[in-house]
Amino acid sequence: MVAAKYIVGIVGNIVSVLIFASPIPTFWRIVKRGSTEDFEGLPYVSTLLEAALWVYYGLTKPGAILIATVNIVGTVMELIYVILFIMYAPPRVRGKTVMWVAFLDVGFFGVTFLVTRFAMDGDFRISVLGFICAGLCIVMYGSPLSIMRTVITTKSVEYMPFLLSFVLFVNAAVWTTYSILTKDLFVMVPNGLGFLLGLAQLILYAMYMNHKDAKSRVQGLEEGRQPLIQPSEVHENGEVKNKIRSNYNTTRLP
Image (cartoon, rainbow, N blue to C red; front, side, top):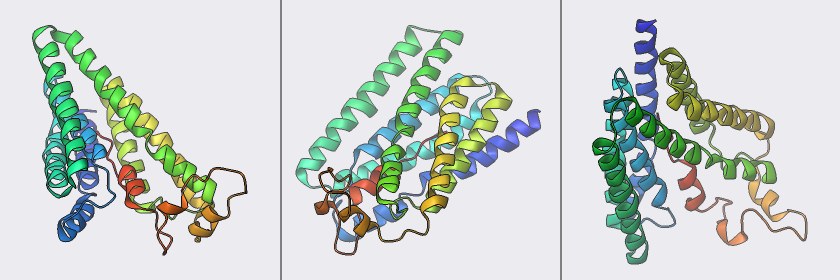
């Protein structure tokens, strides 16, 4: 059982690092073009907070070092993404992003650390940290719901890349298995939810994979309804502007 726990945890580390690395092409594009264009910075700021909190949880709870290790890597990578985003964002977006960093990554994390470190101890500290981490995970796991709604409305999977959906599904499955082996409910609940959402995305992909023309689907929504994707958000080649994709690429770990 101990060996199985570590094997599953190591596999989870590998898959999770690949997911943390998934925004690299996005930031390579940002650096090359010298602009963040329509990308949003909040997903990377919030993922940085989540990864940092999981590091704290993994270092606080005995036997949870595998949770800490992968999220240390994730924290470093997300910090790099946030710094690059601030460097290349226009002034208004830069100011808003810095404000979110100050509020979430410095303020919220700092208050959580100070309160749990100096006002709590033992199992109570671990439980509070677990509830906070699991709560954030559950909230952030809901982000693909907008993409799933887009798929159902447009009957196209153009905006839901199969590879990313599959890797996120595998990641949630691995960490759910790990949480069962370690009896860690705070890892089990959000990743169990992520597993179900990932499975739903793969089912949607199988249902709509043969529908290619998303643009015509969007423009052909029945008259009188508010389109999910506004015409101004679709380029001439049918590609939805980056703000939709940037929100979908946010990682959910562990």
